[in-house]
Image (cartoon, rainbow, N blue to C red):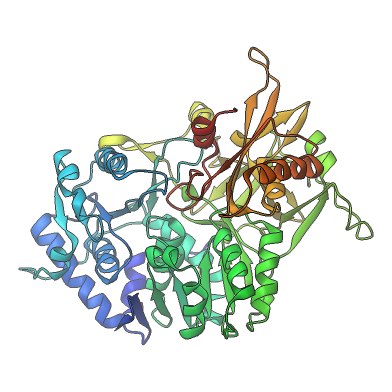
Length: 567
């Protein structure tokens, strides 16, 4: 059970007297502050927010900017003032600026925010957001403002709203998850316990956007309550401009903890395999979550990183979702562990039968990452979606979660209050409350010896001839074809014959420059047939940047089906 844990402001009060630092990376420079100095700045801004803008409990503030000293200071200041914070998502790569401006205006209106803080590089959106009725302030001006009074510690409880988090919107429109201070405190405590935080005091390096729960909570909030660790903050824009900078900075700053999605580790593996020698021997934990973990891609990263002194056992996969604050499961000890199962009974009977050690070369093997047991304070079960009965061990069903970190509900637009999930909401959104505190995630998976293994999303499942085919299997096969950009493949279902329920598969891939499209198209079709036993009815070969993804980099399969169709 999760013990009574300190709330965020109690943790900050303790951490501000410690000797750790927060370091902001910039273009050829760094900005270094001790935690005591940083928290003093945040307290000054919090006093201004309280006195000049009335920010306190039940007030909602949106921050739209790239991670920087000003943005992080503002986020912490909102919490210290007693308000809830929403870090607005940055643009997805396939979204034009006018569309993004309208989406952001709608998000701010749905949240009914009391204040929007606008920083670099989004200052041009001021008129669009203000035109929607929002009170908009320049982030730089707010951080520089001098308060007329002193900071007053707000009266917060475990039920007070800490974060209003937009979901990623991979299978539906984004929703607003309410994360209470009790949820936040419980998840921070669970992460620190499971990730052995007290054993790994050192330096965490992050470039993740704060609009993503892994950046806001897994990187920032966890370290706000420590004070003994250094937090090194980079920008996602700098990472995207130069992906090699992640591991280069890890070596330069002797990072002990890394955090990132599986696609970033896959990219790092490709770069480390051909790049200059680095010293990554300081890394003791490499936390990975936020999207499906592809074992082969991670193994390539581990192989490439090993020649740079990286300890293979430092890799730590995790499973989580915004509705559970962040983390749900995590292995008790680091290291990638893979469940190798027979693909045929998995697709036909939804049973995960382990492949004997003597048969590792079988073509029908599916390899899935083991994501560990539930975090402290959390529970996980797998149920049959039709009967709602618990599944036996190694039988695929829908993943349900419960515990101290799970949200009480989504926030209704325009401050109508929290919406409790019911079965109808579950059918509409893929996430629902099923009684006794259990919530359905919309993810399919199974339990093996108490550890969670995730197979895919229920809404993405493709049914062909009575077989349940997960799009991840198809995408993994297509990724192996020369010329295909790893991490930029999407598979989805289409109806082969109008008026029937028979589904077929369409695959869209991004091609590397200089590769023949027809060769890639044929190679993908053959690879998918050989690996999954299904021939795609269509393979779209696209230029880089075409596959739709959320701002946090997750594939949007439903959007891809709308954009590319079946022919």
